[in-house]
Image (cartoon, rainbow, N blue to C red; front, side, top):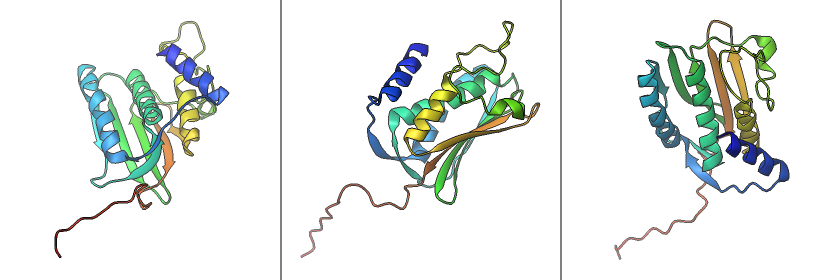
Length: 188
C-alpha cells in the first residue's frame, strides 16, 4: 500500500497519472465502499453506521481516485476508533457540492495539529513510542486526489470527542448525461 501511494504521488507530481472521469452515482458508490468495512468493524467490535440519502447524487470523478479517498478516510477511522466505538459514513447534498464525511469516536485531534494532517509525511505524534503506526501519506494523497477532482478536504475535531473528515465534490446531479439517448417506440 505504501509503495502504491508513493507511486501515486510521483505520477500526480509528474502530471502522468491517468484518470478516467465518469459520472458516478455517489450514493451507490459510497454504499458499496461501506459494505467492505462493515465486516471489519464488526470483528473489531466497532459499531458501523451509514447516513446515506435514498436518492441518486452524481459527481464527475475517477473511480480509482474516489475509492482511494473513501478507503483512506475509513481506514484511518478504523485505526483510531477504540473497541465499542462508532464510525459513521455520511453523504449529504449541500448548495453546490456533495459531501462525503467519515465520523469516528476516536481520540480527536487538537486544533493546532489539524493544519498538518494533509501534509506529506506529517505525523501528529512524532515520538518513537507513538501508539498508532502510519506513514503520513494517506491524508496527503486524499487531498491531492480530491483537488484533482475539483474538490476540497477538511477535518472537524475536538480532543476526546472524535473527528469528522470530509471531502466535498461539485454536484453533477442536475447535469445532462454525457451521451445522447435514443428512445424507440413501436407506436405508429
